[in-house]
Length: 266
Image (cartoon, rainbow, N blue to C red; front, top):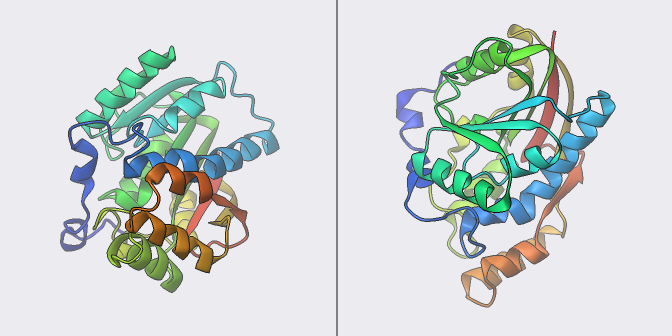
């Protein structure tokens, strides 16, 4: 897989993450739904992967690439890792650092990009990169940098969106574009930037990783009921809080939309 063409990358709205105000921890904002509806799935998959590898997080150093407002970073810290988060959006970093301090969590936040991580070789025991790989301009460079900063036998945990007809229908049309159901901002994701599992596996192999496993996800309710829930929010019958209380992702063998994986640096 090559670097994203400028004409495609220009379509994605990554500026959203630099908007003023708390987009992440305010339960009435859309990004908070990542905490209520996505985090339980991704944290569960990550913890299961670490358990399978007999990897004890206590006292180990972890980096989250694309940490945003710290919604996942704080979960990583609570696993027992000495935790660092890095993100290019200054407003998101400010939000994350403020919330961590309020929660009494010792997390280091840095400003930077996945294409140029400001850390020495072999700095971390574990790197997380979730809901980020489909946003970056140069995916091969990001994977190369993650490999560089990982120690030998270090673990890379990630999740991303698959480039399929179903992901275009659900993640782009239903979640972003079709106003009858849409709950995400327009252009939050660009379908051509989604990543097929075999593409990420190829990049991992080229960068000294031994790929281990992919796990899929699906809604906790049937699709017709999910659409009903999304419609309730659009009509003002439900808030984002109520949507998050009723709709979440659960682990499945279905990798057509959002899937997670892990690999070990050789």
